[in-house]
Length: 399
Ligand SMILES: *Cc1c(COP(=O)(O)O)cnc(C)c1O
Image 1 (cartoon, helix red, strand yellow):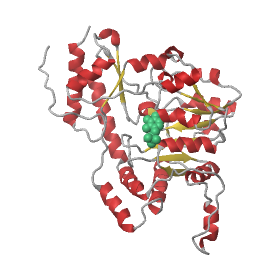
Image 2 (tube, protein in one colour; image 1 turned 45 degrees about the horizontal axis):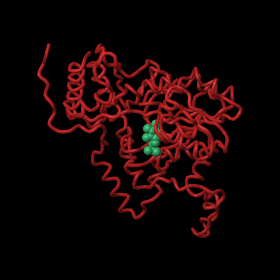
Image 3 (cartoon, protein in one colour; image 1 turned 120 degrees about the vertical axis):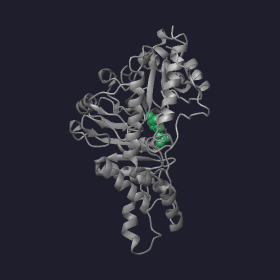
Image 4 (cartoon, rainbow, N blue to C red; image 1 turned 45 degrees about the vertical axis):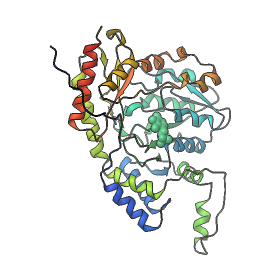
């Protein structure tokens, strides 16, 4: 059965933000208002975001990396402490641990979901462990119940890297909401509004928590450690007075960015429905193709579909992943790879003496992963083009 393959005429990028004009209107309002940095529009984004997620508090910052840094600061991470996380993630997740001269303790992943394997966490807990950072890779939530249980029994904070998980649901609870199994253990959830993420402000992020004091600490440290209380107390007398109560950071989100965020948040459901439709079409098309392993999509989650991480059955193909990426590119389809595990990078290799086999599942899955384009601006024809190109590469290089 050989249908003629038609290569698309223009290049389909791997990712593209979905901006429909409302963003521009709202940014213009901010520019016209004369107040362009953190102010009322950022406050409104925090309120609307907390409402959408069902979180007690939301603190807007200028990246998810900043959010993770502030979350670790808020739970009191110190030099020499350890934080358990996954090697199968972006740079941010572990570099923020290094900011404190603390140690990221990597735990290998679950082959199926690509998320941290909860069964391997307990063995990595030491007296110095302070926190666990699960990452919801691609938008498929990590298995949080056993993580919460371990955190509670060992007195650890849980800081979720939810850069991919807006909006996602784990066993009926929206990612960003409080989960009862955590008890009173510290819990913060960090979202990203980077350009490729499911909602964008160009650069930006949000910290959600139900703990008022953690939220207040994040807010304080996000803007130079300048006390808002002092500000409020003296506002009546004049706006010149402030108190520095800690050496904070410069991580605040601007009202210009927040305006983009408000427009995006209003369309979040529409955009995420479209992503889910695209995932559904891919899955229908690739189901039963022996050379392809489909992304996990368990009944106990609602997937955010930030990524569509396809995996190649390398034994069924005469080419490797790098060739597969090249073949798709030559058919005008952009793809990406998520992620080069952190333990393979020079910094972590040199610092901790890692070899690839230290986290064999992460290593093996990385070798055969290729992420297909999945974003709300893709047309039905774009999706068809990706499907046809993938199937054509598979047919051409089947062993
Ligand atoms: C994008 C990303 C981040 C960082 O987000 P920024 O907003 O760019 O700082 C963190 N973790 C993961 C898994 C990411 O993909």
